[in-house]
Length: 322
Ligand code: TXA
Ligand code: MG
Image (cartoon, rainbow, N blue to C red; front, side, top):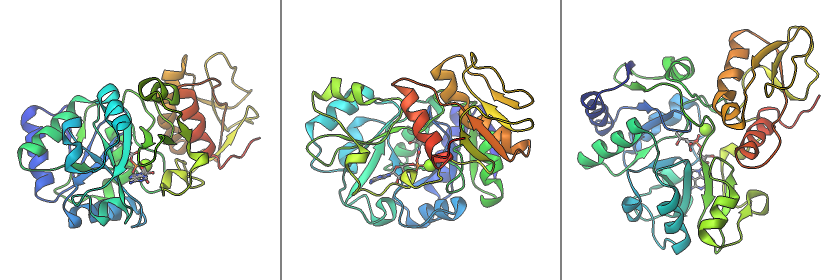
């Protein structure tokens, strides 16, 4: 595995060629780092599953360079999905659409739908474009972490997570810390109304505003498989507990106006919801690096990104409060 810092256009071309040759390339997006492979190459996509230790029947998102490439992967695209793509792409939003023949079972986990996203990050976008210039269709990329673990928001975190599971020709493109820090909103667009399967920076209100449709939340809809919905996902090794009751020597994460319980180890003091999202996964990783057994986290209140943060924290803690 080779890590390339602040990749030049030349380095991005080399990475696109590596994808075309069937190797893995981890790349930054505005949400979290992805672990990419040629989405039409079954063997290459198979390497993602091995590196992540992920069960085979879980679908992966395909990253494309623009909304104009939607028809390469999807069919019967509803007008509201096109409106969403026009409004929020490139951006932190994944659309689930009916698949066409390009989206094979090894991408969709055997489902009749495919997840598509245009990332809003210069290295990621440039990689999708260079890959398409080589005749590539799209880059399959889940978050670049071991299955069930915390998504990486820096290249160093990718290296820690996956370094020993990557091959000598695989690459990590390092372009610093991800701007948003929690994974994209996933919107199921295979029904009459959009359904939010995973909350993110593109909120229910933002979707309603563009589509003029009633937007449902995933609780209303459980037919579609998504590993992010399993209990104990997005979790560090330390036990995550929701609440304030950190004892001496235990980790603590909360907004900056909340004081640190006596003797506990403050892992993050974000001043805003945006900072909270951006730094959360790094803070959880830091807890593991310090060998902490328990991390108490005070959830942020409110709408917007706070909903996404609470969603990930509920999963990281399996809902345990203390
Ligand atoms: O922000 C993100 O979305 C990041 C960056 C790298 O783009 N990617 C990401 O991928 O979080 P992943 O695989 O860790 O999470 C994607 C989620 C999974 O829970 C997967 O099951 C769901 O999207 N998904 C993908 N295709 C799907 C489909 N056809 N139907 C339902 N869920 C799907
Ligand atoms: Mg993931």
